[in-house]
Amino acid sequence: MNDPSTRYRIGPGFQLEVFETYEGMSRKAMEIVSGLVRSKPDSLLCLPTGNTPTRTYELLAIDRNEDPALYDRVRILKLDEWAGLSANDEGSCESYLQKHVLVPLGVDEGRYFGFDGNAPDLEAECRRVTGLLDKIGPIDLCLLGIGVNGHLGLNEPAEVLSDTAHVVELSETSRGHAMIASVKDRPRRGLTLGMGDILRARKIVLLISGKEKRIILRRLLETGVTTMLPASFLRLHPDVTALCDRSASGPHVRGNDVGTM
Image 1 (cartoon, rainbow, N blue to C red):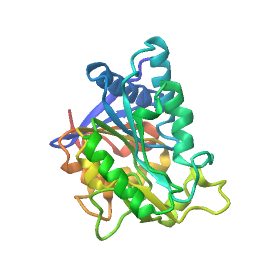
Image 2: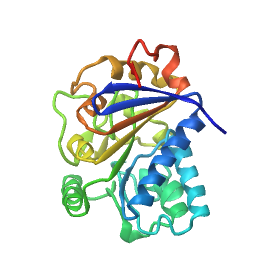
Image 3: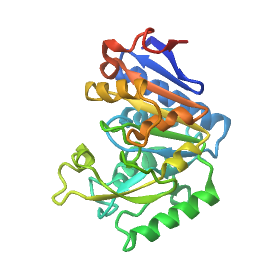
């Protein structure tokens, strides 16, 4: 089904594309990922979890069913993880990615990299991931969602943002995330790639969906670069595509707000 979109330029390397539906937004994201993998089969994809990218992953699985060998060399890097959750905990990012990405795309252990949220030494685990990324990087495409407080990964608004993988104290907003709603003892800390890791990716795709994201999207469009809005740092990257559905954009994203392409 064709879902018309409207494009806007937010900055020199940052464009926003607004779709009428979540399905249209997700299909566009799938096409970007699929297109990259077709041109570079061993691409390193950094992937998030949560409700927003789920349909994109479902469409990637359909894409793989139609071309079974397409994802045979792709590499996957986990963006972040809740501290203290085991890999088989249903609320963990690991469990989500296994279910929605790794198994459907046939990604074996040798092509998957990420944090162990249950590691005995979390700081050492972050150093391990930093060293790992130095060896396997750079990230070819980083797919992101945005938190209602403007976080990327688990990089929370703060006076200073970390460059590389680090342990973070979660905000109350993040601790209320739907992924861990059923966890008895909700995590108070998380492990995440740093803002520098994200910005060193060759291409970034930001997914924004749902009316609860309207306020933060407007802030992203109107605010300069500030550590109190980590997503604003995307303005510094040379190749960012933000994909948004109409429920998130609302009526205020029009040509008068940003430059129409």
